[in-house]
Length: 316
Picture 1 (cartoon, rainbow, N blue to C red):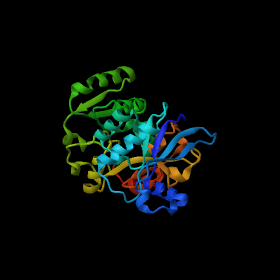
Picture 2: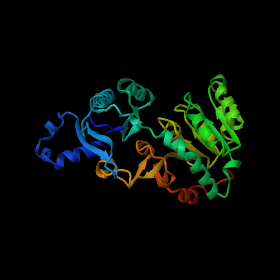
Picture 3: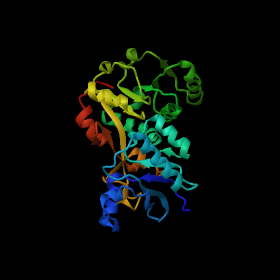
Picture 4: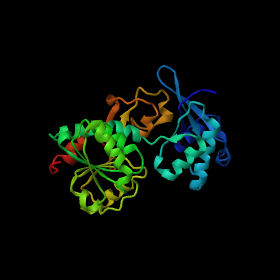
């Protein structure tokens, strides 16, 4: 069996289009719906190394429950993965909540590529550049991190520790985070303030980094032009902000140039930039690949974001 690192569950439209251009274009739609999952393409880099495998499972206009959908992904992953496969790549990752992802990993041994590690790696660079364009310094900024129960917030803090002096963590129980706070202080000298009072402190920060899916917070109290980086799985926080407080800037993803990363472009993506979860499977973290941020489903370079959304904001 070929060794490759990711299984890509092909977009339904792309898979249908693939079938319709070959011998299958003569087959009635009702028969197509009964097709078994099919290996469509091996993804290779410019050297010809196989990076991943594209699998078609679902066709357009096939109705199914979420449970049927997840079971379809699990069965395909078990059948097609190799010993080297580590991740499942999927276009609309938000269809899977945290519980779904844990279940898929338990059943297959593979993680759903979610882009969080990519987000964490590039976030210090993005913050630094944004503030530089605003004629400010990251080292003078106060940042609030809304923590979840994972170790991801502390991976980010380690990345930020050399750049910042002021940091607050918002968490559920101090006992759960105190060891990590102490370790960060011992390793980096960064002093971290801890709080459990959500509404009281949210209005004090113009840079918020969120890891948590469900936050009991009065979003109307967020300061105008606050920048929120939403690294949560389900993006509930940014969705609520976008519905309630239009003055807050919600950065939901980073977008990357992928022109030289893969050959089979027609199967991998339909646009010239890929989101962080797709960039993740290349195991390549290069600042030169970073292009834009996603804000309320609109794409901006950092310069465009500052010019169009941040320039007239209050002092960070």
